[in-house]
Length: 375
Image 1 (cartoon, rainbow, N blue to C red):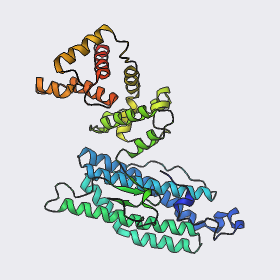
Image 2 (image 1 turned 30 degrees about the vertical axis):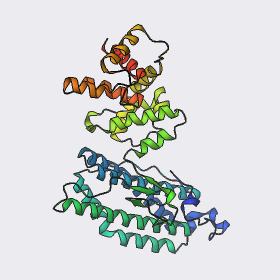
Image 3 (image 1 turned 90 degrees about the vertical axis):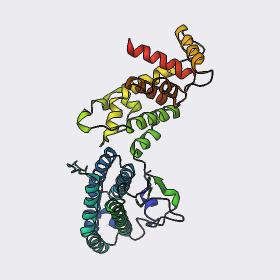
């Protein structure tokens, strides 16, 4: 997702307007620019954490389109913060770790109001002042990128206003907002659909736009995890999808970070320790079972079945037909409803197999898993 700094910044060369000798002492030549870059980097990290907290609140209220909006804002902030950090490092400037701060979370509607109030208050005045200050020092790359940040901030403010307005209208029971958002990986521009020609903020190609799923951080790490096979990556995503479909309370999820040092975390984990979302914490707490399920499923060999396996598969075929078995639908027909235990085991089989209609391997795994966990 992260682009190189030169690719991000319109192809403007860092050295095109800066003499080589001046690069030896950037603090002397660009003190104001460096201060602004540091400030925007810190604010970007803090804002991303706030937006992710707002997204979790929207998720708990089942306002999934607004959840996607908040996640898109968080992703946009992170993209820009990473770029700003890269600019500072290229100038030889240390980038301090941004300390966590308490995030005040209210209702989704109030959270939207907070965004629009904060951004509307002095956004234009603040960025106009910053640009006036750094233009005196002539760092072309910083000037261009901070101009982009300003435009993206305005874009975010306007989107938040539109969503809030729809919530406050007579028909605003379900806020009018796109179900998904797309983010330019160069500048953080956030739109409800990919633009036709170029990015309206940085004029980069539309191929730089990526969808901001509410699960984007998890998917991003899993997709780039070289320790997992493609089948294991797909399984990990299905596990997280199942977790994400539930609603958890933060106070009921006890996560102390000790799992980060376990051998299983090296394979199934999410990289370096960071601000894990509530659902990511649940995923991490379930890593041992996730691995066990995968290992047990892999042991099923239809050419080497126990007699109990063969008998169970035959029983399923005799009862529901010779083809793949839609066991969830069949059980619902028979019982009218499914117990929590039945739903849980069917969820496990569907998640590990990637199928909702069970083949013989899935049926064997189901029998073995039930037998192992009930004895």
